[in-house]
Image (tube, rainbow, N blue to C red; front, side, top):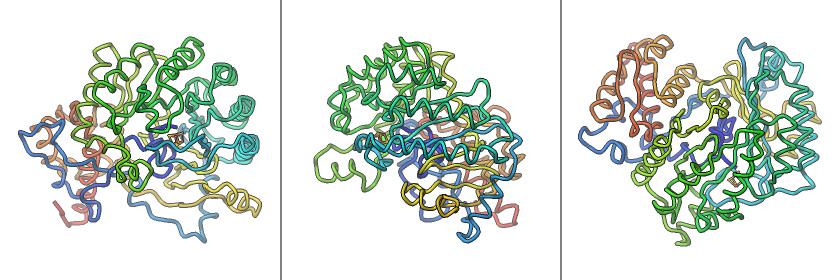
Length: 484
Ligand code: SF4
């Protein structure tokens, strides 16, 4: 449904963690122009005098924090993951539970996995609960609190209310949840109702993240969404009136056929309803996906380019902040204190993420991995007493510095001295870049801090990629070979 920023866990990447989330929409995307060769700092210099919002870059860059991970040999994977689970944590973590079923394949989405069948729900929840129980006594899980859980997909809200209730009860039974743990359930309005929401709240869910994408019924129909915009808005109002959870939604800008007026109405609808938070995602059209094919065959108009998306982003942020909403990250704005956005913020900071369920990705103790996505294969591996994981890899040596850059830019102030402490030489490597970006209107330097402007915030993935190239340059300088 959406895109927890990394749908976590890295689902596919887009979400390592999060969402990537549901991603598609947001921010992962679009390969970097220099993708074939390692990018260097100079690739991210901007022409002074251009409009920073619409002209700073030709396309969106993508530099995920796991790029440069080193795969663990398959023969050693079981032993290595066993060691990871046997090693205690000293800090809080988050957990991601994946539900790989959707009622239909939405046109824009690159995360569809399995068609939802009601009869599959109880067995899948049994599987998840068994995994929670089996891992609950490992040191990785039991040694320190978990302060945010994200149940994402797919479409978790499609599961039966009783199955969801026993899953959430199992979370409390088997995981060391903190007293104020944020428990998010991702959903869509189709197949969801207030009775189910009340039951979820009763079980302990305190945050509902609803994938709306657009309130325009015409745009929604093109995406494969079943309910009208009016029906979705009414459902969100009912969830808020229930008063038991924080209620947030996702919107996408730059969709095919979506006018500026449509987007303005979407933003105004969110404000009128009074949601606790909203995430604004730029459309990221997956190459070869159903939307790309529809555009190719002339069935849909082409989506907005990044330079056409930029004013939509700026208008969305400004219309909400003018009404008193607070921008807490590049894409997320909140209206009430009830919305903490803890899971997504933690993922951006690179905290340990503990994955459960087919297709969930996670990372801890310098390793990242994904649970086998194919449900039958996962069951078979468990029956054979093998770890049902794939893609186990050592994270890159600059993973923590990269996460610090990403999280700092997201929250509006990057602490350059803190990155320098992790990677000596970073400040020198990025000095020309920061001077250029400041002159071009992408941000401001104040002492040890760099704060992106609204334009810089739109191009955050390019800024992150440029500064990450600075990490590589600093590492190379340390080895006596400057690549600037
Ligand atoms: S419900 Fe639609 S948007 Fe969400 S994961 Fe499934 S196909 Fe993607």
